[in-house]
Length: 54
Image (cartoon, rainbow, N blue to C red; front, side):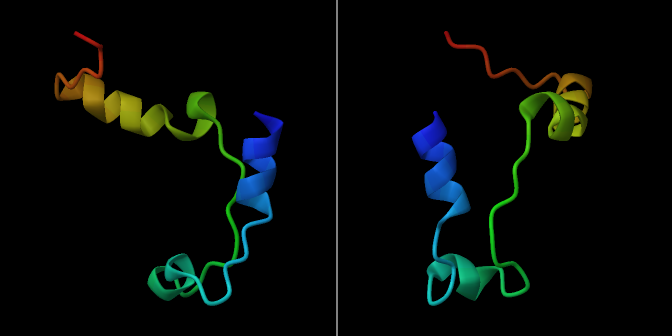
């Protein structure tokens, strides 16, 4: 997991498709599912969305 994090946080944005699409951004930021995705889970729950494997 640490190598994956390192790959994201050391990604060279300059000249990349990400930089072209997200012009104002220059790096990935650390997020957590628990904290930063709470609003998405709330919206999904209200709309009956489930990501459960079948």
